[in-house]
Length: 254
Image (cartoon, rainbow, N blue to C red; front, side, top):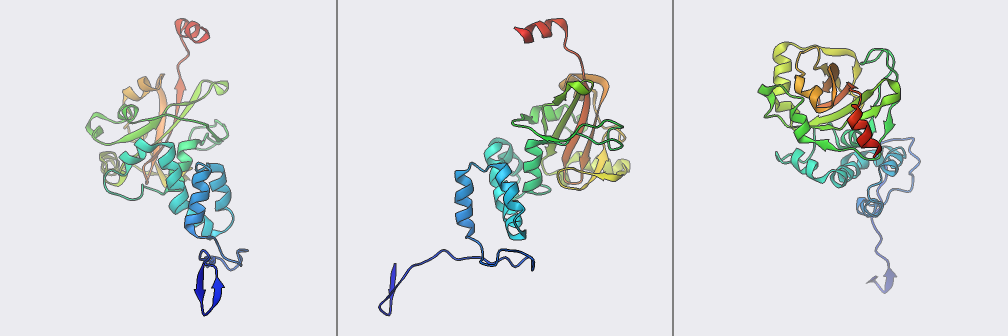
């Protein structure tokens, strides 16, 4: 409380008007970013609620992309985020919303899309492990100073032992993989785009840049792996998983 000319006044948080859209319904302004930050911190950066808030108007969408998705990523995968930003960048390739979606969403594939005529709907996953060590197996020997995080395969065994994996490069714009793709004259896919950031895609299979070690890492057929990388360094891939051996099946049942 403060006294001004004998009149008691209450100090209120500044309200922010939405100036991004004439059709926006937020005519009474917005709460401060600090208040929204504290609310979502209390909600443990719930991604479904962040996505819902983004749909309210462009002001909330901008706030979510700039701040809320960033905090979600840092909470969900803290060591990975520290590494991705260790080059001094305050952002990541693409944007924080794209990275947040990559952490929790298996994009599946559509008929006539990247992966032949297979149709498997995209879906959210509760938890996925991303590994920098696994990422090394997806790189040719001359590119293994690059940093690539790759997820464990999301298994769709009812569709013919299909697995999907996803990942992200650190500082892809300066990576050896990108330089090699450009040197090889690799063509970007004419129609398909990254499901996370909408950037164009390179096929690592067409560029002949998938080492045999990638199949070993995900327990896939030797020729049963394919993946794409977008201009922002997001990875989307598919593999044909090998069936379990008898001993592995017994172990699993036990």
